[in-house]
Image 1: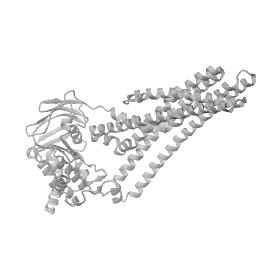
Image 2: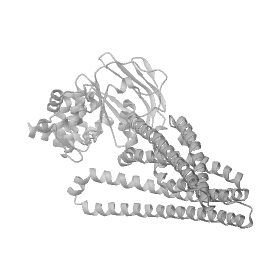
Image 3: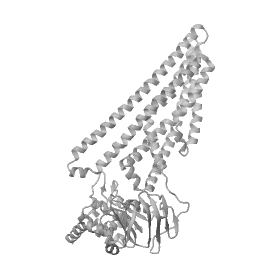
Length: 572
């Protein structure tokens, strides 16, 4: 039995219950074989039909009891597997939210979506099939073998020799199947991720005239997955054939020795027939487990993948941070922080300020946003809030005050109103409409209850960013993190969005990472990053006069600034 099963809550009483019922089931299997053999032997020896009928009644009673026990075991396992898979899904989702966007960027959205939606279902199937059949294999063959060896030592020896051979063959095939299943699971996740990314970028592909060539890539990935699946099925069919062949050979060997015993007069018909009826039952649990083993491999891999996510360490401090609301008197101090690409980052911010974060690609802007959002732990250094020192910002008191606006905000399939309610599910329609109006979504107010996203109305990049702004306005959280929210927008759309976003920044603590330097004129403090270090820090005016790296960035970006000013002028 996989050791990973014992890490799931509540598995011990389930295994104890299955063991208890399986012992009863094993006794009933032996009794039904004995009573069936007695009925047949009685009729064969010319006994009374009434006596045979009584034995048959007992046989059917044992048979009914056996399958009633089977029904109870399935109900126990189904209830447990449903509860466990749902709990595992919730834990993984909570972990993903806690870890933030970095994991999704690393693993791929399509891979994680497939794992959460389909992986949990496959894991549930794994529990449904594996738990009862593993217990069956551990108890039923042993019980039957003890009865058979008590009745006929020769048959017991034959069965005792053949079962280990069968198990060894199963293990060898299992290693091959595991390797194939790993490859298939990776291919399945690659296919799912590729397909998800393709759906998201379908409009862009069509616009660029690349839809047809991209469809060939999808076909190639799908064909690779088909070949992998067929290769795995070959192993599965070979395994099933081997199990059936060895089982048939073993039962036939037992039958031959029983026949010789009857001919020589060393055995009577009743024990011989009982043993012959029990021989297939002896191998049945092994065959069932071997047959379903391949069907559970994807579930096992999904379970391991989810456990790997749950095993990702989160830097939890011993002492919580107490912070009800960020006010003008609150202070955030970052001291000598090292995290991923960041090195020796130190600064302090007090009250409601707007902090711009700029730098070349790879300078560490997004990493700093992840640290400030509590999505990334620290390798060294400390962060303190109002004098409360912490090793990281992965704290509920801090994160509950955050609104995070990424470069590509996610809009799920649902109504526009539900998407705006993301941070505040209990908001009224009136509040939603007000936030939509403030975010510049007046043109969509009439469609507030219309489905958007997958299967609904498609939105432009600018409209999706406005939904993110509406979420922030509706939630009214005092701290806002923005990770290059306009990097993919054209200058005219950005100019229109800027007019909407600036009111959001008022009376809030804002951290804004961007390449677009025209935003820096609206910031109270500008942090210039270079290769993970703070190269410069100050106001826009101070840094412009300094003649350093910030000045070089401004001069390089003057063309964009002129274009933006022209766009704003045209809109006015």
